[in-house]
Image 1 (cartoon, rainbow, N blue to C red):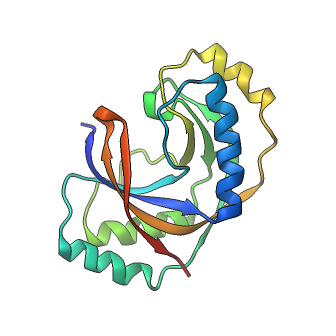
Image 2 (cartoon, one colour):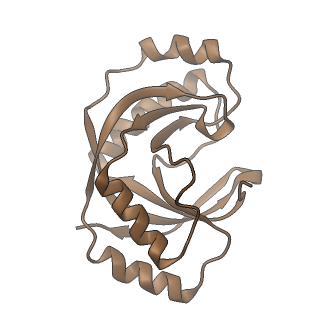
Length: 170
């Protein structure tokens, strides 16, 4: 069962990389109507509730957490609202390690079919539109770096993603 209201941990990007991703997302969303959201990769969650103990543990954890380089696979899409069109990311030991470390702080369904990606558009878009969009988009960089983690309040029913706190990584 999908948790529609709760909290997630997102990976965020350095300014230059965020600008790069936002430019692609802007181009995508000119073709595919989408709710607005921050460029991110979901690292952990969802959590139905969080408490002060978890926040303290998370704060302590990120003080020793290094930035992560993500290897980009390419543009992909699915017939799912929240994975309509995205940049696919290769799974890596570093990404799995940070997910496990956060799960050790407070359990979440870390065994679910984790498909790392950076969403470019949410929605129920026709497959043909997405297929025709890919050749119009720029060639992707080979890698991108997560330089921050963010605690995000999520309410999918009203398409709200509110960043509550940002943590800089080493």
